[in-house]
Image: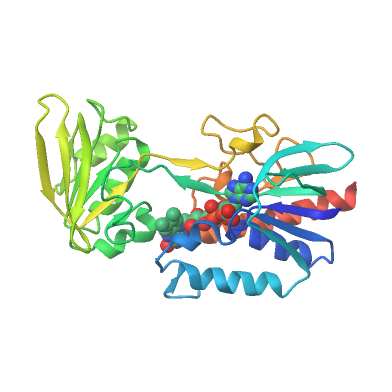
Length: 302
Ligand code: FAD
């Protein structure tokens, strides 16, 4: 069995595995797709020490760093269940069962997509999901934020300080964000809020040039010319496969303590799949390190 079995090969999992291997203990990583969300990222400008890099490049150096240690990478393998017997057992879609004395869950998250024409085509060409990451790209430009919940309104406030103008589009008749956020939003001169509208299409040629939406009252379609669209309708943790095994919050995020341990002793979690306040590469790597040190502490005590 592995001493530390990491499930998930994004920044959190890579960091956890390296920290474990450096303790000289048997470490394995199961990953559906090594690199995780970073594989899908174009420019990265907030990974400290590196002014600019690109997702696939960062993934390549992550993999090189992991391979520098005796870490067993089981790539293109999807975990489908976790059970506690004598040891922890992770069952894969392939039917194989991998055992560990401790487990680190780092299966990340995915942005909920709106699924309208243009969203896929213009990803990284005007369609964005993370204002902390991509906000500065739209400096001085016109953008829309789809979604009027807390994350959408926070994104709009954040973007309003950078871009020329922000239009918030909400499907329901009113915004769902906290009152203080809505107040702050309405105090900003360069923000327009449109409610009760359904996004129909994001259009452009090689980059985003506008958005078309339908007024749900009148059924009329309208267009806004703009250069960017931030989709903010939720970040979904990849934790469905864990069902009832570890405690989660109402969003499906795994609840962890200050050692990144879950409700099950010996099972740790790190990165975007947890209830961490913010979801970023650097934060995931930090929490992967914490989870790994937590797992090591657990192993020497048990
Ligand atoms: P992930 O990166 O999501 O990795 C999860 C891993 O788990 C993957 O290997 C996946 O294949 C695997 N996995 C999932 N389910 C299973 C399963 N059942 N079995 C086995 N393996 C599984 N952050 C920044 O800091 N700066 C940026 O500029 C930036 N830009 C971004 C741009 C885009 C388009 C996106 C989508 C995100 C961006 N982020 C950025 C956010 C950042 O990518 C995430 O915060 C970070 O990748 C989270 O790391 P993680 O290891 O927790 O999860």
